[in-house]
Length: 322
Image (tube, rainbow, N blue to C red):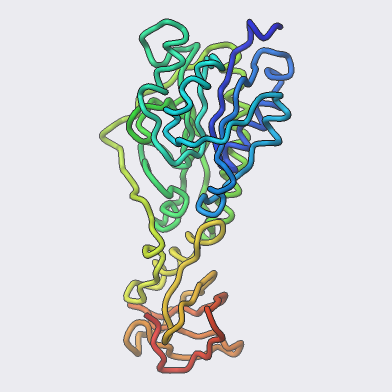
């Protein structure tokens, strides 16, 4: 089938999740047979690498698709309006992008088709979010899912609107969260799910059969942005909450931290101990045989299993972690 008949995709991402999605589309039967063509890739420049969790370079996939990879200078994409318009997308896919996309860009596929409706079976703007929307709109859904002690979540594929994560749902791929799940393992599983979502989405787009169900606004929740200070351990909390925080901030996220004497300590793993509180929370109440400190909490203690200080550390019973 000629490119003039193929469904045209413009792909926007700078994230590992988006890399997997685009890879799966390029490997799909629909792309190989010419039912789908990727006409433009837009991604983050290398200077964003250090401040983007899950950063990915798209040069390889753009080369495979034989299209330009534009390193964006404006994350709203407004400055790139003419470049997107020239690519004439039926569908604009925006995956793992930290900025909201304004109406001028969201309406572009409809404008190209000469219609008023932003979305239809044959055109629209699509995003993905690692939470079971409408639950968990907003930032840091993977850490929040673990911090909140959820046992299930999902990858939501949805239509983009002006507000964050509130568009109609195209599909959801469920995920079970294990009792010992870390951000590392959950991130890896979502990466796999994004690849699968691309495969499931490809035939829908190729046939121009996109459909979606509006979200139930009465069930909507918004999870706020997490900042580095939110990873500071408060030993006045119960030990299970502290353990969840540490698991939620495993790689690729910045780790949980606390201060011991004048040193900042990064924590990678802890073990709760159901002991009777015998000291003020934050007090080192003992040292395990392997030298790991046992720190008092609101309802017991946590053993620091894996940690790193900004200088050599010598924990002592009675020392204070704050």
